[in-house]
Structures are given as C-alpha cells and as structure tokens.
Length: 484
Image (cartoon, rainbow, N blue to C red; front, side, top):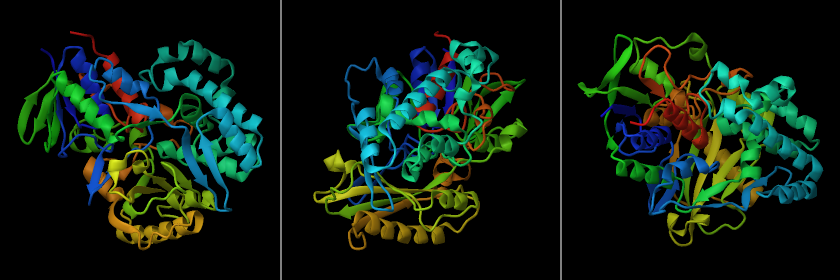
C-alpha cells in the first residue's frame, strides 16, 4: 500500500486525508497541537464554548462531498435568513438578509442607494464568480490549459469583466453613492485578509457566495466541521498523531522519501504539507529554495479576538454583527502602518443565539474580533488593552450595551498566539494578502515543481485562505492522485 504523510491537521490537511484514504492510500496525519483543526478550533472557558476561529460557513457542498458516504448524517447545518446585522456610526442599523430581493429592499429603505443597483451588483458578482471560479479556485494553478476553458475565453474577449485593473473600493464607488453601502461591500475584502483600497475589484465576487448561494450555520457550531471530518477520516483508516512535531521533510534525489518526526524517520511515498508555506520552507524544507516572487509577498491581515462570556441575553444583536468604523480608510491605513485604529470595525459572533449549550443560562458567548496587522514585533499587550477599551466603548455607544460589569469570563487570541499555536507566518490568517492584481498568480502551487511527491494544501497556498478555499486546495491535490 502506498503511504502518505500529511503534516498538519488543519481543515485542508484533514480534507485531503479523507479524499486520499477513499482512493486506497494509507494516510497518517501529524499535528503539533493536542487536537485537530488548526485555526478551525474551539475554546472552552468557565462554562462557555466558543468557535475559536472561522465563523462563517459558505459553499457547504465542499463539506458535503467529504461526508457523502456517511450513513450517520451526524453533521447538519441550516441556511441563515439574516446573514449580518450592520451598525453604522450615524445610528443606522441594517439587516443584510440572505435573500437578494429582501436585502436590496433593506438597502433602499435604510440607505440612499437603489434596490436595482444592489441587484445588479449581486448579478455581476455572480457572473464574475462563474467566469473565474473554475480557473482560479477549483483548478491547479497556474496551468496554461486553464486559460482555454469557455469561461477563460469569455474573459479574454472582455477582460474588463475581471475588474482586475480597479480596486474593490473603486468598483463599489461606481455602483453606489451612499458611503455606507460602499463600506458594507468594501468589507468583503477582509474575507481574505486584504485592503479594499488596494485589492483588485475581482474580489467583488465574494458577496455572491453569501447572497446568491447562501451563508450557513452548522447546527452544533463551526468546530463540528473539524470533528466530523476527523471522524470520517478515522473511519477510512487515517491515523492521527497529536503533539507530534515534524522536524523536516526527507528528500532523496529530488523526491520525497518520508519525514523526520521527533528525530525518527517515517517512510512515505508522498508528503502533503498543510502548514504555513513560509514556515515550512524555513523549518522543514531548508534545502529547497522558496521562489523569490513568493518570498516577497505581503502577508494578509491577522486578528485580535476577545472571547467574552457575557451576562444577560441581548436581542439587539444577532449571530453575526458588524459595528463599522467612522473612517474606514484610516482603519486600513493604520493596519498598513503596523498599528490599530482608535476606532476599529468590530465583528461580534454569538453562537449561543442558536446553540443554547454554548453559554450558561442567562448568558451569551461573544466572539469579538477586529482586523489587525500581522505580527512584526509590536507590543501586543499594549495594543490589546487599548483595543479592548475602544471595543467596549464602541459597543456601548453603537449598540447601547455597557459590558463593563457584564463580562464574567474572558480569553483572547492575538497575532503572536496565532503564530505560536498554528505556525502561521507572522500570525496572518490567510497566507498572502490580495492587495495587488497579481496576487492570485503569486500563490504557491499545490504541487512542488522541485520535489516529486510533495504537495501543499491550506490557506497559505493556491487558491487561498478561508474554509472554502482550504477545502478547494484539498480537492485540487486529490486530482493529482489516481485510485489504487
């Protein structure tokens, strides 16, 4: 039996293990932490359960493909009727309903933009996704043959449809006149750790995933994606080794022959790396040069997350909530300079709205996040305390909830901790940013050009970060392997 060693039990590594085990390969997964999941993990604090990382579930079919043969149907999810509740500094509260017509009506009622413009925007978002997804998301890249598909030829005939030569913000300004509508759609750049004032307009395809396809919620929380896929993998014979550090990837005559684990060799026909690409080359592949175009890439943004156990039930908030900054441009400018705005946009995710057991009776579990720059040696203790104060003031000012005496449990996650716990380069969440029009072409490929039998999955390689793209990377690697 041919063997595969997978380094890292993040969602990309687990999904790859499931796919390849189904094809008859013997797969072993080595994880440095005590449990699987990587960033897609959970945290328990004083009776509260928190989904520790990714919080939005889109393109669920990528999970469905992995669990299709599971007779237990243990994993389930439902579509959100309300995707996000937005709070603006002027007091406007807007409900981003999932259904496009209803969402467009809400924008027309609350803001100063036409419903027809919203619907046209979402239609173009759909068209852009359908033109680009097969080439840029679901196929190995870059490959010349990818550019001879029907979708690619349509783009070649009308390259303006790609919107790559305008920033996301510029595209949004052409569609809408109300700064609040523009800000709402600019926020989608943060879904892959980018800056809407720099990232290409191609990213305007992202709203399509939420409003045309749908945003979903796993019935037992986001971490259920991890636990379910691990269960499926183990049922297929995949072995997981936790608290296990991989020292290096062994290469002989230009081909992988295994890995070194705690000083001992593990022979393998193939190796799948699910760790951060920059960390992998620095530690496990030190004799293999990382292409200069990759080494020069700017890391994506990171996150500062507070996990608050909050006394009381607060109907003002829904599952997903955004409290916008008054000056969005200045917020991103501060991040580009390695700092945090005095008035950051705040995201609040409360799973106890749907899962009562995630918090004690009469309490809620608040996952409170702001986007921050990657770690570059900043004083994170100082920045964290400053940000906490700003967040509490903002929640009181914009939502009317004074958290001062309501927080009964608390933890946090900052770029330093993200880097230490996941190996993510500088604590970035999505590998490299998409802050230039060539970013999609500069991601590391899923198969090594220099070392035979070496493959790469996860958020730091093609096609990018976030749950759907990590799962897509696993699907791409799977396409290289024939069933045994």
